[in-house]
Each structure stands twice: as C-alpha cells, then as structure tokens.
Image 1 (cartoon, rainbow, N blue to C red):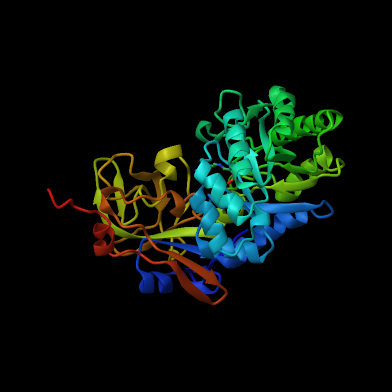
Image 2: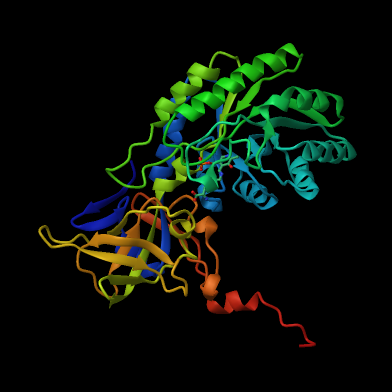
Length: 421
Ligand code: LLP
C-alpha cells in the first residue's frame, strides 16, 4: 500500500497534488511519501513482534539523509556497505550501535572509520577481510563485533544480477566452511563473533528460498554453539520483493515472511536482524517526468520524456517493469494507445517501456513512474551531462526538497582543467 492516489483525477503524494511539486521543483523529480516509508517500517516491526529484533534498513535502496533520519526516528538501524553510507547514516543521527556494515570489499580505511565512530557489527564476507579487520582492530586496541555472512547455496529465483546466495556468486563464505572460519575468528585478536549473517538476493517473490536459507542458518547455529561459540544474533538479510505491476503481482507479505522467520529461527534465543531496503523504500517513491515530444515512428509512437536511463536505470539494466501513469487521469471512456516510452539519452537502451497503453498525451503532460523509491535516485548518474535530479519528501500536506537539482554551473565546476593544458 502506498500514499500515491488520485483525487479528483489528479495524482497526489499524500495530500499534495503532484503537479504542485512539479511546478515548484520542475521535472524530472523523485517524490517520496513519509507516511508510506513509516508504514513499511511498521509492517516489518509488526511481523517480527514478540521476537527480540532490529530492522536495519538497507540504505543502499535510498540513502538520502532525510529518508535515513526518518527511518532512524522510527527506531530502525541501518545496513551500510561503504564508508560513504556509514557517514550518511551518522549524518542522519543513527547511533553506531544500530549500524551493521555489509559488503564484500570493505577497505581498511572503512573499517577504521566504523570502529572509531561505533559499529554494531561487521558482516564478514571472506577470510582475507577477516584477517584485515583483525589487524585494524588490534592496531586500534579495540575488539570488532563480527558475524560471518554464510553463502547457503540457495537459489533465490530472482534476476541473475541481484541473486547472491548461490555458490557461484561472489558473496559470503560457503556454509560448509563456516566452522573453520569461526574457529579462526576465535583465535584471531581483535575480533569477537556475535552471530551469523545471510542474504540470498533481492526482489524475492517466493518465501521458499528464505525458508531454505534460514533452516540452514538454524542448523549452523546449533553446530557453532556445540563448538563453543556464543551465537546471540542472526542477521537474516533483506530481499523481500514488492509488487511492481499493480494488480498483477502479489509477492508474500512481510507478515508471512515474519512467520517463516519465527518458524525457522524463532526459538533459538537469538536477536533477529533483518535488512530490508526495497520493501521499505520502493513503493514509497515515484519519479515524475514531463513529456517533451510525441514522435510518430513507423508502426509505433514514442513518448519522449525529460527523464532518462541516467535518472532511473532499472528498466535498461534489469529489464525492470515500472508502472508509468499519467499524473492527470484521462476522462472515463477515453481511448488508450500503445507508446514506447523513452528518454533523450543517445542509446536505444534508454527505453523505459515498450508498447505501454496510455491515454492521449501531449507536450508538457506529466507522467509518474511508480515504485521508484528504491534503487532509483541512488543509482542515477550524470551520463550525457544531465545533472542529478532533485528529491522531494512529502509528509501530509507539506513537502520539502531533500536534495536540490544542481545547476549546470555546479556540475561543470567539479571538473578541473590543469594549467598546463
Ligand atoms: N542486505 C544486503 C547484504 C544486500 O546486498 C541487499 C541488497 C539488501 C540487504 C537489501 O535488499 P532488498 O531488501 O532491497 O531487496 N539495484 C538492484 C537491487 C540490488 C540489491 C543489492 N543488495 C535493483 O534495482 O533491483
């Protein structure tokens, strides 16, 4: 459920008409709904009720400091994957004890940054990384709390670019090797194992792979405890999928996902952490764009927008579907026609959708891309020297720009021409 609904034929973000925002901020623009973000956090919180838990919002999905602060104010922790995300989380007021650090390539500098600023745990992904962290923590005279991300060799049945739990993926340590690795952690200075971590992929629309992975984690918890390790925390990753095609897809609900957690690892006496990103941010955001031209091609009509693949890369990168809707609803009975919806970037891949049925559109009309709150703005680039587009947060009847559109001058001023040129 989200808070982007039509009222009197005009799409609203909560109580704010979308055209009002477009008028002030111009297009393209990302618009997020605070109420939706809060609701999605609460849905997970309720799904885990009765279990000691921390929801560590995977801020890679949407790392705007205002969004992360909103999550933190609800009591969320965060999952970070870089020094930049760590510092953004801190800027959003998230205390170190609620930050978990994931990622296959944490550098020593990033490790130091997190150890200095405070960290709940590092999720280790390899033995070289484990040894590096031991060295860094020892040199600093501190102990780093760690989990090992185990790769359970489970097929998440999602897009190959976002599946992470198969043995051929670069992530984690094969679960069969976990005992050796935990034994080495015990022997290494500066490290203290506090739990186990797993994350098998993103946009999962079936609970079976989660169940399979969590059963393996439960079994491993028993084995490691027999080996004498104190396992008090299980980080179960993120990955629960969202509906991208309204009315045409119904991924499992967080409540059902919570039930799988309860059934597989609920009675181990461990604190449960989850790292949802997409489900919190995805349907909490839209991208709004204007029609620049309507172009009649041979056998097909193109709707050329002012947004492009550099602003929302998911369709070109993953063939992802985003619902694209007119901001002003057509009168009932108006005939729809198929359009290819494209951006101005000089690549055929700059195509958002093919043969989408829309009512008649004309220059200047606004369209909204739904489900664009996760992996939208964060994956944007300035390709074709198109400045990053702004982000707006709506809360009830008011809105604020939470990242401004840079001017061309600001964008160009970042480049430096050496004096000898
Ligand atoms: N935890 C870890 C360790 C992750 O790698 C990820 C996502 C998450 C949590 C959050 O997963 P989520 O709940 O959002 O599914 N750019 C792609 C998605 C990449 C996901 C990467 N890892 C897309 O646009 O579909």
